[in-house]
Length: 172
Image (cartoon, rainbow, N blue to C red; front, side):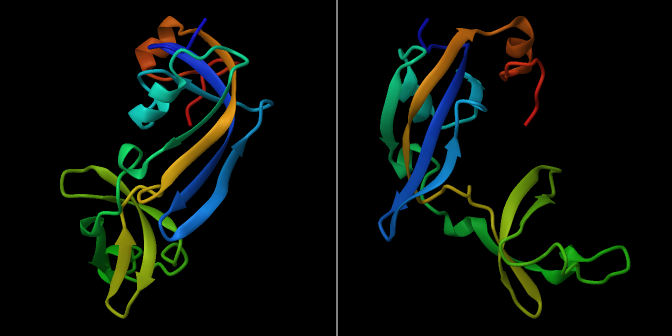
């Protein structure tokens, strides 16, 4: 069976990133003891990722690069913003310095109730600088690994729009 739409795929892989001013470095390794499962066509991964794997079968190795523009795009300056410290206070009006520190990821809700994940990249007297770009924006992605398994999706997986993994229902 080969990788195609609505198949459940398990991969072991190594992911490296690079950019014009950043040498290639490994940021994630997934071994075959705990593979990464996804439902083709419903993964939320860049389309180019699934396209590179299409037609491969269990046991096939792969190595490919996804250009930044086909991955998560360039860093958007509009997604980096200074927000007033008042947003980051506890119920007593005290600034939440424990959770709001450089490098931490926070979820903030916009005026429409949408959740957005941002990284704290700066702290100033009156503002917190947040970066709402995807963490892999601005990088080329380099994948190498092995297709561990390919199977038909179960009804529940198709209904939920994601793979459930080897032991049933898992939400990540």
